[in-house]
Length: 273
Image (cartoon, helix red, strand yellow):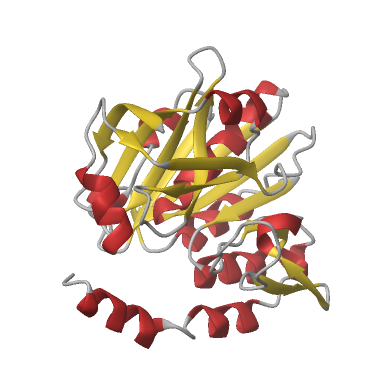
């Protein structure tokens, strides 16, 4: 059992939870994830490690309340426990020292991007971040990024905060200044990451992306999270979740992402959601 030590509501559908998990906190690195079970009958839900504190033995997760299991998790309060908290899983993000990195986050993609950019900052890299959301409410972690990013740019679909438009519009603005970007790290919806790569690939700006296809066991055995990268079949849970964006077959990944939508809908109805 793993104790919930703090909880925060980031917006109407996204919550942050800090959980006491000593082994995971000691071993985890930016880019890795955990699998959580709320109770002994619960399903296994993979969630990115958004932060960790090795002294407090805690790991922070950020989740969107979208279905049965995340609704159960949302009902948990500080001082209560979750059944399982397995990790760290996946490979640490392939971060390396350079001069300037721009992070691009779409929605809850800000959660996995946060520890990566913070780690780069600790390595002496200048980092900027672009955070996107449908509206101001859906822009998360901006204040946390300001602690180490030289610039925090915001883009919202409706213009309620920052620039009206998409994160790619802001990235284009930065590119147009003539700034020498050594690398871009994009994390968010597949279509967003695809469009970022569409911009950076012709310019030869290396671009990392994080893939989160359906995962079951988190060990590469079930094959549910397979993706095609560089023409080869890989598994996001053990070979990733971070990959070279230039090599990812986004069309296939987006097609696979929609395969179980009807079943997911039936499952929600069956559970009374």
